[in-house]
Image (cartoon, rainbow, N blue to C red; front, side, top):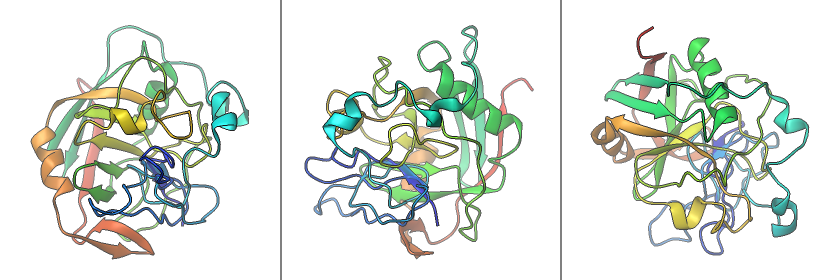
Length: 257
């Protein structure tokens, strides 16, 4: 089963952050344990990643293969096929209506045009409606956007190019793309940082030399994100840190539409 998680596999000191895509993540969640893996998206392979996943499903993709490969990551590759960049202009605002409350997010099409366009395509196609926050780690982040309440992964579009290094930082209250250990592997899964994770997930600090791309900021509803991250979690479908009671995104829509 693919799951995308914050993958700064190496990001947390020496611990790979569990990948967000299609893999059962091996990331450790305890605060005292080897740091949680970065948000990782469902990796194409389902190999449990050490601990480098973040929001978007605890998959076994670990972020950050090697510093060498990471160096050129996010600049080319077939994974970056996705579409044209979003046109800079008025920053879109997206509202996530969840079973625990609403979260309003402002996207940044100027600094993260590819991630913004990708996210809006999923929002406008109602892809996120009925999906869940499948990974919650106190002191780290909440990840969602890829699984249904019964932990079935939804099919996605092609992966996009990594935009980490765009000047935006993984601080508390920011929205970022979850991915696998492959730099250009993000698809639908995203995560919200509930603490300042910049020194673990930003490109200049990431163990894989790539980092996780931030593309939005929470305008309101961080109290909802804080409630979500603190719900009781368990293991479901082979993935840890899954809320015992599903936290569902009832709808995701662009404000004003």
